[in-house]
Image (cartoon, rainbow, N blue to C red):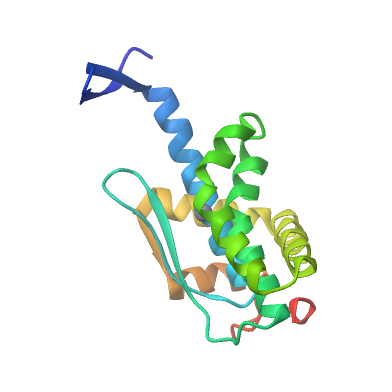
Length: 178
Ligand SMILES: [Zn+2]
């Protein structure tokens, strides 16, 4: 590909990314956020929306009303770790890049574990990996929806979760995560 993105910077015109690199990073961002959303729904955390903004950055908003006890720390760690883990699963090479992208996430995990127990942290990572492995088609479906439409809202994500057997019709998570 010859088309590339440039930025005017302190050192003049800086080559940023080729179109192919940009597409790959967008794909990573989509799967990163789809991973967050999928594992949140799996763990019973409500997802308000997943959205792509003007810079092609993808964000996920969630809400949780549970008190921050051990099981809740485990669920939140699973939700936060899921972005990095989904990226790794989608594009296994370039681990360092995935790690750099997840720096804020890892900081949030450390903050959670400062108040809790490391056992819950490990359990959270295992929960996220299990959920992603079991429900990968659900992750793909979320990323496809967000790619096609630029956003996905709570009710759409819930319908997808029901269709993929991630939550039952009344919106409750599978009992194994509680
Ligand atoms: Zn993230």
